[in-house]
Image 1 (cartoon, helix red, strand yellow):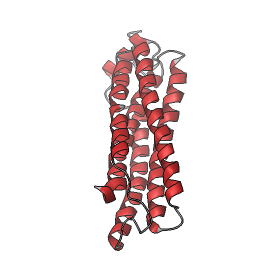
Image 2 (cartoon, helix red, strand yellow; image 1 turned 180 degrees about the vertical axis):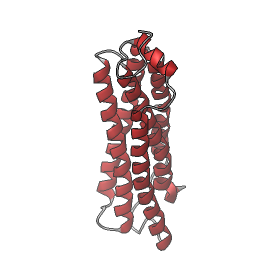
Image 3 (tube, helix red, strand yellow; image 1 turned 135 degrees about the vertical axis):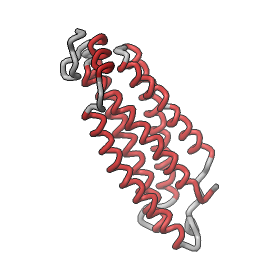
Image 4 (tube, rainbow, N blue to C red; image 1 turned 120 degrees about the vertical axis):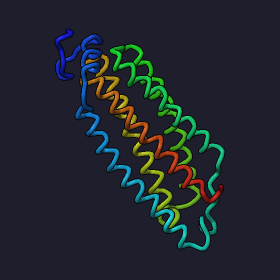
Length: 206
């Protein structure tokens, strides 16, 4: 086991720990998720930029007949989502130490909180759709585009969680350890962008 130096060959906690101790550069999986984050961040920032451009071009925002967004519940949900960075970071650390059991438990905890966040957000989105249409005003169009883009990032993160949990049922390998770290990094990105989205969404009421 101690002779294993590549993540492609590492199977089991001891081998994974050995690879992580000897690693001198970030694995390709981490660089891949960094490129994904850069692409998605550019898209989301473009949408947020469009929101603020339209806001400063408008004399009334939101337009007449559209209710201002409520503040309390979105902030509570944001706090819940941000908390999920803790179990995700701990899961990444557990994989580097070669501990598969704690990794799975922490991922499940994060997954439950993230899924709960998305479920409540979908209910709020449906309520917004009943209150105003994305096709009626520029506000509605950019508002729903921004919210749905953020929710899409959450859905991608949930699918990644489920995928790695399924993989971990077969035990811990070097590739799976890198996968957990990459997914944790992706969730940190989602949580940071959630701050930008929520503050932009609630700006008319702040």
